[in-house]
Length: 149
Image 1 (cartoon, rainbow, N blue to C red):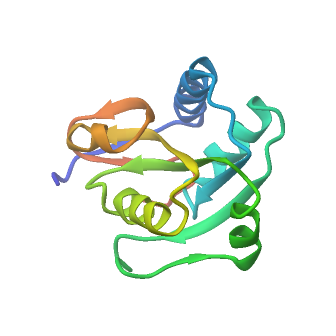
Image 2: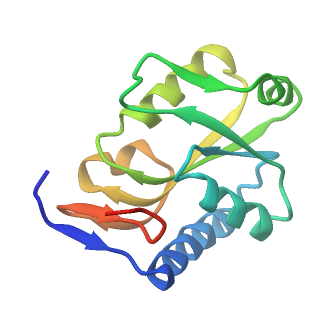
Image 3: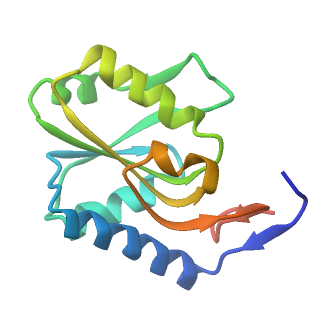
């Protein structure tokens, strides 16, 4: 990763979220629940909920740093037993490790669910890992409007 940073304005981020959500809506994928990857995936999850008809939103914790550990609340596990379609949202995909971890979890534990992955920004090397994305990031690091530098 290079040292260059791109500082996103709230307007740029808002536009990018709406762009990826338009792609989801145009695809006619209608999730029964939305799981936002903490913390960056929560804002896109809330936007998606409103756009797609107030779909219930839950949070899950997954981190590349905690590669073999992630957390799905019991209430989410209970919900997963009652739904057919799940949308998982995050703000950014870099290496793809987090999404791959989640993909593996759902394939092993919920193989009958139709699970789609959505990110707002994606590195080129990770485009084939997600189902929906708004913008491709070539190099550098994104600083989101709500983050400290």
